[in-house]
Image (cartoon, rainbow, N blue to C red; front, side, top):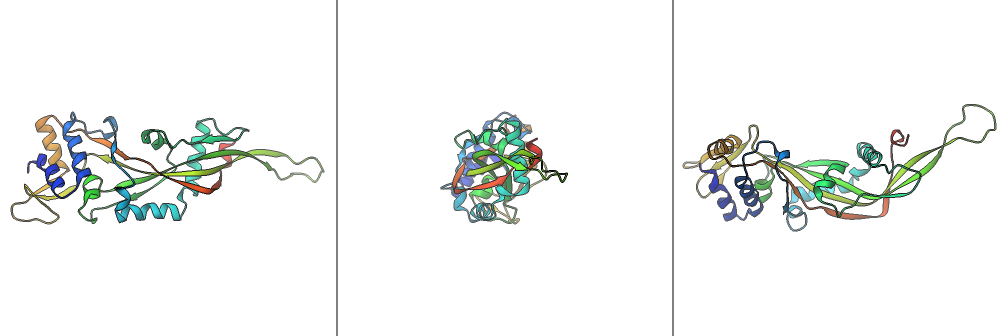
Length: 250
């Protein structure tokens, strides 16, 4: 199977984003380490594309209805980020900026939920991403809070207080992240010169990750990369208030 025909087949089925990401891969110098490739941040959009697919919309609903960004691991991750950025001080401070590039926001994601699998419908999301992460970032204000410490004696001395911090989350952002690569073993279906099938058919050839790797070795092109969507932002009014774990306020 000539895999350079696959983008055209995808376009004939309306899978424009899958075809576009294939075009990018074929156009690039050979690279098998996605993190070393220039990330694509312009192809995928949350509104108008990703959220029109029920499986992605359901994943975002789960993250939202269960407030995943307020969970224990998310609070620890946020605490580490705020500590690293020097924002856990004795002053109220704004944190997070949803207008920054998604590649910068990715390093501040507090949680994620994976979406997609081999049994999903053959559609543009399957062609573009397959299995991918829906990542979550937050923005708002971090506030110092004085917390009284329990007395260790029976004397009437003034109670000791220590400074802890609360994050008041005013915005939550969702974006998709995936590695567009052909590493390892992965079946990619059976392809003819004009069609694709999950099952073997006469005149159809099996295609897998190794098919693309062989093409790269033969032609000296084909570069793996990371792909991001844009960021879908929702406002929290009133804000979600979470306690930053005390270990980060010391």
